[in-house]
Amino acid sequence: MRALLGDAQVAGCTKESVLAVIIAVAENTNLAMLPNVLRPLETELRKLMKERDD
Image 1 (cartoon, rainbow, N blue to C red):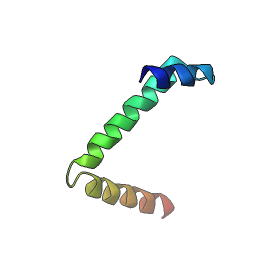
Image 2: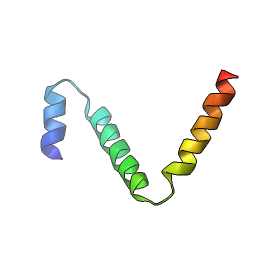
Image 3: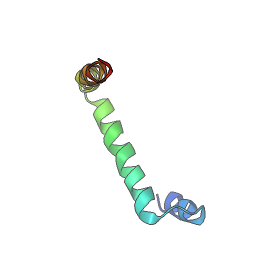
């Protein structure tokens, strides 16, 4: 993790932005591991997209 953070900072990313991405990846990975979590989310997103397009 420290090497990743260091490399990203050398590439011009801020420490805060790199940490935010790491947290987002961890949260999404955790959600993906839970059974039946993504299916309801996909259903709700489809409803919202349909409402927006109508």
